[in-house]
Image 1 (cartoon, rainbow, N blue to C red):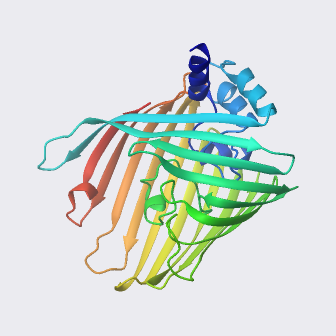
Image 2: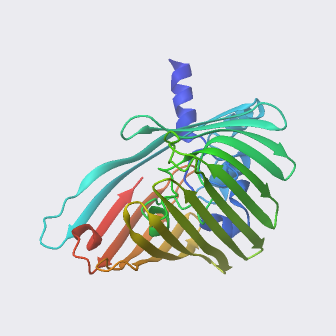
Length: 350
C-alpha cells in the first residue's frame, strides 16, 4: 500500500503539463527545452521540471524533483496531468448553465533505451474513456531526429487551448493526432519539422493520399518568426493550409501572433477559404502570476457564413510546483445567429 501511495503521489507531482508557447518566448528558448516531445506539449524533461519548481511558481520548492531526476537517470520517467473546471455560459434569452467539467486526465511514459533511441506514450484516460494521443519511437542524430508512430502534427503555435480558432479551424490540435513519421532539426536559432502522415486523424488509411505538414521557426533572442504549411490529399477532396507565426518579448510582456489560411477543395461542398488569426499578450505581473489577454478572428468567403470573433482575459496563478489555478472570461461574437457563437463564458480551472 505504501508503494501504491508513493507511486500515485509521484504521478500527480510529476512532469505533466500543457503547452504554453509564451514561456518559450519569455525565456528565448525552444519548446523542446522543457518537453520530451521536440515540438512541445505533454511530458516535461528534466529542465522543464526544474523550471516548474523554481522559475515559474510563486513559492519555489523541491517537491518531487529528486525522485523524478532519479527515475529519469534510470531510463524510465512517468508523468500525469489533470485539469478540471467550473464553467458558466451566458447566452441571450437562455438561462445560465453553470457546471463542473473534467477537462482532461492524461498519463505519460517516456523511456530512453540508449543514447540515440527513445520511446514516448501520451494516453488520455478521461473524460470519455482511454484515448491514445501520442505513441512514437525516436532516433536522434545530434541536432536531427526521426520519429515514427502516432504524432501531433507540426503547425504554428501549439497552444494548450484547443478551442482557439487557430487550433479548432485548422484541426491541428491535441484531439487530432495522426499516424506517420516526422523528421526534425533543432538548434538554438532554428527549429524545423516535416511530417508525412495518413491524413485520417489517427483512423485507418482509406486511400493512397497522404498529409504533409511543415513548420520552420527562427529564434533570435527576444523575437522569433516562423512559417507553417499543410497539404492533405484525399479522394474526397484536398485541404491546403499555410500561415505565419511570431513571438516577441517586450519587458514583462510576451507576445504571440499567428495567421493561417485554410483552403478546402471538394468534400462535396463549394470551395471555401478561411482565415484565422490570433494575437495574445502575456504579462508577467510578478512571479507565479500571468495575465493573458487574447484577441481572435475567423473570416470566411462563404456567402451567409458570418465572421466570428473571440476575446479572452485569463489570470493564471501558479502557487506551487506543478499546480496552477486559472480564472478567465471569454466573449464570443458573430452575426450568424448561432447561440454558442454569441455568448459570454466565465470559468475557473485547477
